[in-house]
Length: 190
Image (tube, rainbow, N blue to C red):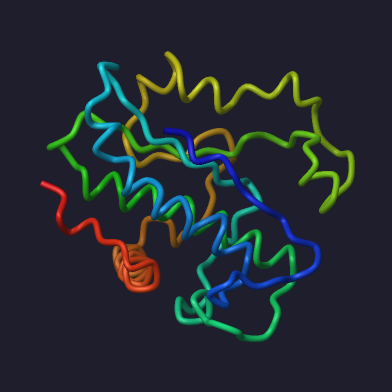
């Protein structure tokens, strides 16, 4: 499973439920989709099934107060700030999912920076400062042989990233709020 859909919204908007659209699409949606598809990933005939979630080198260095991330109908956030927070959220989701699945599953949970690629999103937010899409292969690498060799819960291709990505307290707090606000739980995984 590759959670690669994402948005960078230069004009802040809200989801139908009132959440910041960038947070809703980039973090809440993969959380919910992954839980719904987890039974199918578990049934994979691949000896090393993976759940790969796209983060970014642009992830925030620290997590803002979690309540602010889930604020409904709150004030608009800056486009770049919302995007950076969401990419840290994706990384933290992956780290915590790896902990939850642990050794009872052969599923590897991996996250990565896809590279600075001239996608529609990069062009809208930062301009043409990356490589051609045809040369972008970080996602492919994690989905093939390179990914098989990696440790579950790890981040690839984008530097060290955030100090909060491995904070037990922050990981648990974010996970609890994701479950509360999506109405989706992973507590029933056995």
